[in-house]
Amino acid sequence: MQTRPNTALGVTLLLQSVAAALFMTTAVLAPALPPSLGLDEAGIGLFGAVTFFGAMFGSPLAAIFISRSGPVRLTQVGLLLSAAGLAALLLQSWWVALAGALVIGLGYGPNAPGGSLLLARHTPPARRGLYFSIKQSGVPIGGALVGLCLPLLEAAFGWQVALAFVLVLTGATVVLVQPWRILLDIERTQPKQPLQVRFGDVIPLEGMKAHPLLPFISFTAFAYGAGQMIMFTYTVIFLTEQAGFTLIDAGVAYAVMQGASFAMRIVAGWVNDRWRRPRPLLAAFGVVTAVGITLLAQVDGGTSFPVVLMVAGLCGAAAAGWNGVYLAEVARIVPHEKIAAATGATVFCTYFGLVVGPALFGLAVDADGYGLAYGGLAITALIGAAAVFARKPVP
Image (cartoon, rainbow, N blue to C red; front, side, top):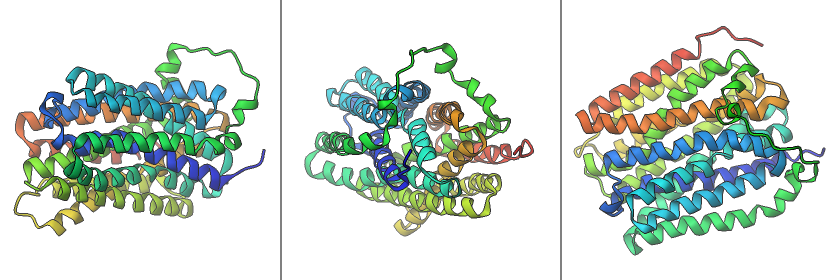
């Protein structure tokens, strides 16, 4: 099989970026959405929880269908599903919006197992950490795109036009990657095996058996995933509702957070490929995240905007810069034929953190304000960092 590392990277990066833009749109537009959608400080947490509840099951289900459709085709279908879920907001109904959140999450599911399989198939092992980190940088690229563009579109034309922009972008991307799908999805020419879906495939914890370190890596990803999603879900609404900044200023801070995450993911992948000590690197992310969260909790109306941008950058680099290192380590330690299943299992745990994190954070904010919520989040990040060293390395 001819390998195409740069083509595989470009396609997975583009698909990841648009998928991230789809699920971050609601968090960015939340302060401007109509009250009938119920996306206030508590409601946006529930919306995020439902979204990643769908992704929890979308990811392992995608790992099953990859062998029949191929990773690119499955991710194309996922983008269209997520777009349909996001479009449900246009109906301005709370219950329809929650159903749409579930569909957004199901559509997001194919990105991790599909991207991991595609990159593991086409990239050299010595550079895999960098390639995985660049692919995962699609998350902050999508976040920066919506953080910069959507507040401006909302101010000029309204939130419906801003949302429609993301939907049009999604459709264009699905069409754009089709020629490369013919080159990359080798599954489309292979004999189709009978499809069997078992309970263990939907709740894919059996994939943890692929390597003794996977449960510990997965717990760290659970804790870090919760922190990352809380940062992405609540930063804009915290800066507008609590600190008194405009939606455009909060969108700029959100974009800076995503930009710092983008840079850190690439740097972390480069360092990981050369240092080859992923566990201390992963632990460092948790410690710095706790510091950034503590600083963010101190932001108020009297904080200068440059300081807000610096804190946002620190939080983005720390709370959302670890993903590529984690996925590359999973792909490194398990046999090639188990990469999709092992990734699906660990991502299932990550998504569980994305589900419970925003929901619990929203409850804490509602009960006692942001001080308690951010304090609990900082402690969670430190526990995740400690979990990295809970077991000795196994080759």
